Amino acid sequence: MALGKRTSELCAPGAFALLLLLALPAAADEVPPGLHFEAAVRFGVSFQSFPDAEYAGEAPLDLTAYPIWVDAGLRVSHLLFVGAYFSYAPTTVSPGFVDVVSPCDYSCYARVFHFGLEVQLHPVSLSLGRGVSIDPWIGLGIGYEVAQERYDSEAYCTPGGSYCDVPHTGALQGPEWFNGQVGVAVSFDRFSIGPYFSASYGDYTSDAGQSFMSGVAHWWLNVGLRFTVTP
Image 1: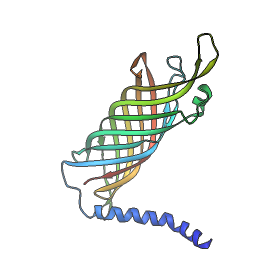
Image 2 (image 1 turned 135 degrees about the horizontal axis):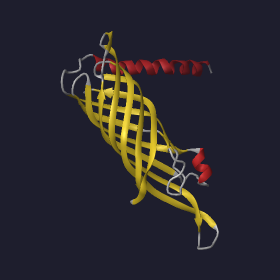
Image 3 (image 1 turned 120 degrees about the horizontal axis):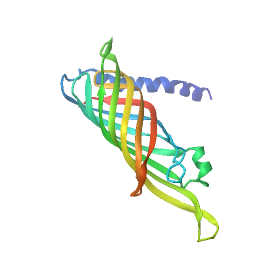
Image 4 (image 1 turned 45 degrees about the vertical axis):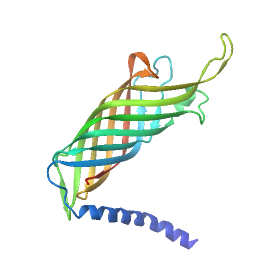
């Protein structure tokens, strides 16, 4: 019992030490000046919100998503990053969605994809010495979104008959007009880690190839951690 408790107490410090050991080799060399490649991966949680309660006579697919987000591009200078982004996010369905579309059991799912172009501005770097610095940044992107979905909705089984659960499978998609980002990172020259927040605004213009008469406006709010590597 005591050994198990002792082991659990050492887990967090051990994980932190391992992270430092991984970062130290990258910190040994300075980031090359001028134009160079840079990549990042982000993990977080994202919440969807619709300004309108309903669209096209259906309940909005109100979701909580868990995006895995990749950035890749060129660090033009210490101030500017230009590149592309791609994210894949499995989701869970909100209680409000379950109340309207019932039952929503294990067969319900949604997978959300975002991809596009972005720029990031790193206005200042605050040195802490020994190759470590604080790097605040802001970003702006534009792109496209696809939300693959499957849920059960009530419909007539036969004309004039009783209701039954009918599966609905679709792919909501449309432009992502705005993707604003802000974050701060602790930088070890070639490696950095830190929190970020993003807010994106877009329109769903079609579902499974069927165009809507007007776009379905929605927001995604995203918070998490960003890991950056300069090879």
